Length: 120
Image 1 (cartoon, rainbow, N blue to C red):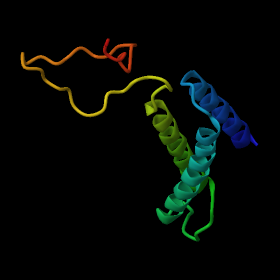
Image 2 (spheres, rainbow, N blue to C red; image 1 turned 30 degrees about the vertical axis):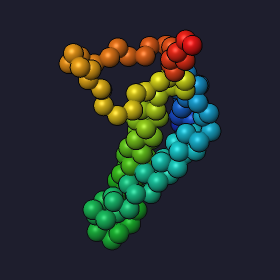
Image 3 (spheres, rainbow, N blue to C red; image 1 turned 180 degrees about the horizontal axis):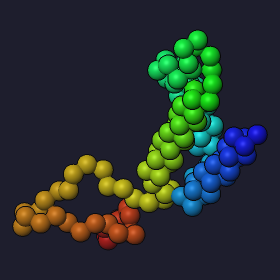
């Protein structure tokens, strides 16, 4: 039950983060849920493979601890991915700076992008 409450809280946090960036949150919220369960499964398998289940192979709290650590790692990766996404409407220059004949790079376009067409 606590995992479900934590997952709902994390999805709301992701929604708030994406709202500040002007992006739709639903895909990123699905990513949070998928990374949670994927990390939990991979963490549980890793814990069982490392012998955290005991000598008889029983599943115990140590395997569950590995599963929770995997879930936290998965959600952390989801938030890193979301944080690296730029806000909608921001200009990001592609490629490398172009040097002029004087050896300096031209000024960035600022808030006026694309530049207005030349006067006739």
